[in-house]
Image (cartoon, rainbow, N blue to C red; front, side, top):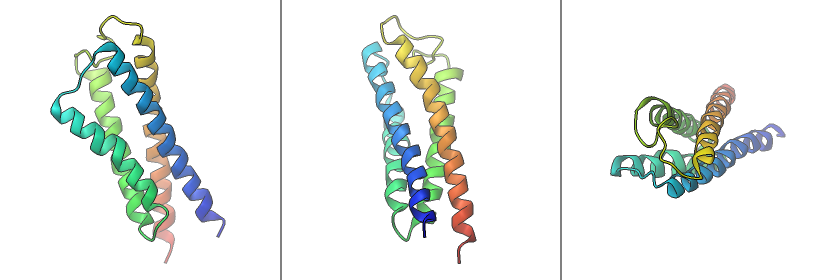
Length: 136
């Protein structure tokens, strides 16, 4: 039975770390005046912020397997979104094309930490799915 609390702890660490970095990154967006369009706003709130929190809650219920899948999909969606907007698409949201401002370093560091926390979340979710799939 010790396995359940440890599993939940790793899920919680992944989700909370991702949330903290997202809050810092959102602060950098605000300070630099880098806005989001309607699609991006909905995606950020739904997939990047809310879905991992729902996955965390589900990890404490009999729907833990669904929570692990939700965590995997949301972290993968977050990672793809972040790579595209922060490193590929040329826009004020790209780390190489940021507007002038004192939050440029915070933006760049938090963008990189988002990638790290999302990759970590993907790994944690995949491990969870594997463990939960082995249970009867």
